[in-house]
Image: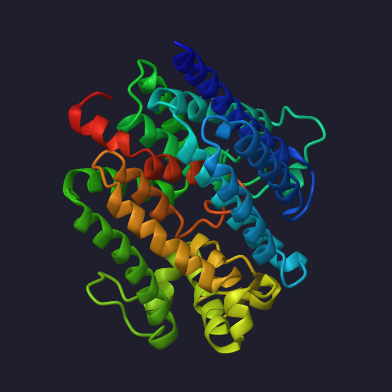
Length: 405
């Protein structure tokens, strides 16, 4: 009885910690601070909270893990902050610490699928509600001039794409798609269809093609990817496909695309398909290959080194940016060695925990990350939490095989 009571209390505390993580994320998204300053503050608070919780509360029943946690934290701090911390490399160092501590937390929690779904869905509804308030211009003092949204014309009607409270459409489009898929494939509560409707409606209001394509592919994957070998092959295929795009853009950008009804060069084709991101990928990847030092591949330079302009297929030069709008490249540029290790671990655990019901979510995140730089980082924790919940809750796979959830 005492053990059961403790487990119930522990699960309640775990949910409270997750809600605290979401509160800090949402609060940081609302702060009028430029750059990643708000993300740094929120992440440092999250890391401190996780460290104290793991060390002082979670391991009450199992003291042997305390030494592992302490040693891991000391080693990671040493690696993360040596050489002396530099502002341009702080982001990735904090990201690695966040991944490690969230992995420890998710490995130790005994939360059920229903409890985790409750946290995910309620946090999303709060985020969406606040985003709608901003979208309808109901928040006084909000910096609407800096919003990164788009105007869409449907006949005589004009729409502004839905954007998240952080001020960008990219913050809520894939987020809504992931919540839709979670409720479609994983959540079994009676409210799932309401949540699916709300999240899908929000996704449509962003008027972005990429998350819709990623969502369609995720559903297709459910029907055709039936084992872990095909699952890994599809993820590796995404990487090979992306690298092929970069190769084509740097090798034969002016060659005609075969089998198209109209004449288009590879440069023109990918400019349209990727909403101009291809121009950044081609230029930045050449800087990465030619100008990086061995130290840059390990620790990563400041991203300003990768500042390039958008160059239209006709040669017109537009504004400059260092953001590749691609989560993989952003991590690779910040620390190639660590990013490759994380990706290998990602593939290994995807194979180990493969399930037809959870793999579409993994595939959706992997696909969306190609054209969105905010999926794997210090911003929205949902993507990491979903991945880690799937990876660390192997019983989830057994429950699905038995049809219990």
